[in-house]
Figure: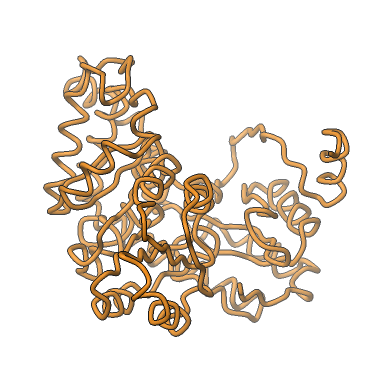
Length: 385
C-alpha cells in the first residue's frame, strides 16, 4: 500500500494536489460561486426581515428528524414545497445526503439504475455505497438508453433512469422531454432528476427545468438544493406520498443525521419565498449566460455546449487550468480550475459560474486575457464519452 506521502507527491506531480483556498475578495469579481440569483451577495439586506419573522428559531435541532421536538419550520418548509410542486417533499441536510439517501432507499430487490455517464459524484457514491445494480449510458444518448431499457425491462421489477437537469461541469441540459416520452413506453421505468443547478434559476417560479418543461408530474423523484441559488444550505426530495414514507424509513442519511437547525430551515423558507418572485433575475441570468457563452465561443472558435449559467473553458490539462486560473485571479477574476477526479482526463477546465447581478461590461478585461492567452491556440474540443 502506498504511503500517504507518496500519494500526496503523486498528486502534486499531476497538478492535482488541492488545498483549501484563502481568498481576499476585495476588488475581485467572483465567477466561481453558485450564488446564481445573487441572493447570497445581499443576505445582509434581509436580516431585519428575518428576525421579525423567525426570531424564535432555535440554533440547534439537537436530534435527528425522527427524534427532534424542534421541527416547526421543517414542517412549514416541506408544506410550502408541497404547495409549489403539488407533491410531498422531504428535507435533507445537503444535496450529497439527499442523493446518497434516496439512491440507497430505492436500492430494492429487482431494481436496476440506468444513469447518465456524467451524473454527480453524490449519485455515484450512493450507488456504490448501497451496492446498487446499475448501468451507464453515454451523456444524453437517448438511443443508447433505449437499447438498455429494451434489453433490461423484462428482467427487473423496476428500472430507474437517473439524470441531472443541468450538468454541473458542462452546463448543458438533459433532454427531459424525450426522457419522459421514453419512460412512458415502459411501465416499470421511473425517472429521477437532480435539479441542483436548476432550482431557483429556471421555470416560471424557479422550480427548475421540470417546471419549465411542465413535466413535474411525470418525474418520480426530484432533488433540489438550497445551497446554490437559494443562498442557504440543505436539500429536498419531491416524490409521491408512498415514496416519502419509504425515504423516512430507509434513507440512512435522513435517519442517522442530526437535523439542520430550525434557524437554517427558516432561512431556506424565506429564501424560497423570495425565489419564486424573482423572474426578472432569472431572465437577466439567462441573457447574461448567453452573452458570456457567445464571447467564449468567439475567442476559442469552439462551442461551449452550455445552455445555462455554468460555462466551461477547456484547457485540456491540469497545469494549464491552474496557470490560467492564477492569471485570472491576478487580474481580479476568481475562476477556479477544475481537475480530475471532478472531470475526466482531458476535461480540465476553468468553470465559470455566473450570477444574475453580474455586469458583463466589467468582464472585458477577462475576455481580453483569454483572447491573448496561448492556451487559446491549443484548446482541445472535449466530448465526454
